[in-house]
Picture 1 (cartoon, rainbow, N blue to C red):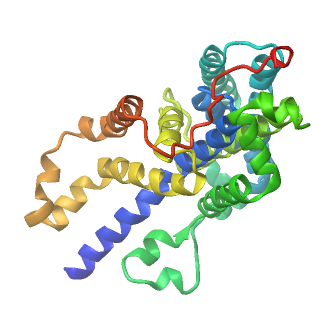
Picture 2 (cartoon, rainbow, N blue to C red):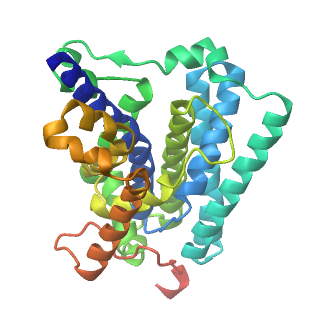
Picture 3 (cartoon, rainbow, N blue to C red):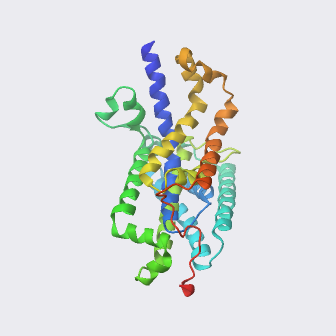
Length: 332
């Protein structure tokens, strides 16, 4: 019986990571974009584009690496479109981001429906994709009771997401180019006056950030075994990622913790009944919570985070001062 309880807890911890990783990709990518001073509300659409192209072309190539690369490039192209419109043509960033979400979701269903009508690639038919997405246990760490299998036995995309977040944290806080990027987001006029190419920094980091979002979409496609239906694989995760940027205080390292918290609440949707059955004395009440509440909980928490941070500005906020403001070089 005790082993059954331990298994339920291990599965719960494991699923938290499964649900938080796509959020980590989306949040880390958006942090990089916003640190350049650009507010991109198109995360949902960009993740959808990365998901559909990464999955289809990755399957056709029978290569997980190819899928990751295609998803990154698809997201980066969306970022390039956003940069052209907002950086070069000075379009409104909020409207452009929302338009990108609509465009991305539309492209997702258009391409997906077209391919499904001909011959949809089933993930399990491609050995390199299926095996590449299998869990890989980290020696030693995966043997730790309870948390070992939960935290240290996952697929390669999980480890890649954590590595990207930590590398982005180091890049933004410890490297010369990262500090220059932050200066562009804080005061592009001052950065321009000391010789920093503001437009180049914006273009490059918007594209890279959106590429990271695309990989997050690809992860969601594989996690759902590539089953294409009437609902989008992303399912609102892009919007939650935008809010998590604020929750993580524009810090990629804190994004790991922030997305883990959101993953916890999302995991209750699928594991709440199992916890209630395994621990009827303390957690039996979870079985009485409506499934609809579990589904809405991440979005409710997202709304609360946005309201709290809007009403009460935190000291030491990492929000770039020029976030969402177009830079007119002639007005410097």
